[in-house]
Image (cartoon, rainbow, N blue to C red; front, side, top):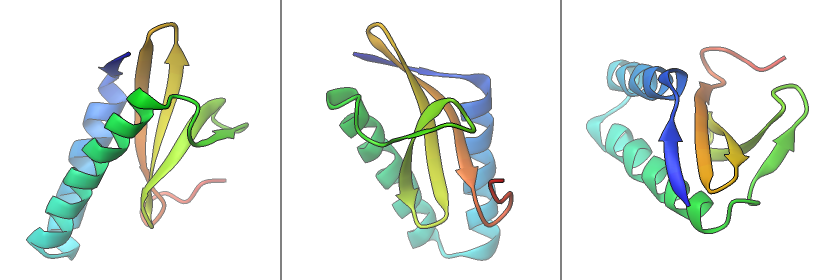
Length: 92
């Protein structure tokens, strides 16, 4: 499978890094980045992992306690939709 980053995913990934840099140490920032890529690799190997979210009509996977990755599965691709930070923008 291949991964496709939407503009929204690229923007929210960068926004989360920026947010973490303001509030946390570089270790937490690096941890988020590393964990994000580990999760993406895991999803590429096992696309059905994660929960389906009715509200988003997409799958989601918790990266760190406050950030979810929302993604869609299309044919041979995982489409990364958004990195949702619950501290900044609570769901619902």
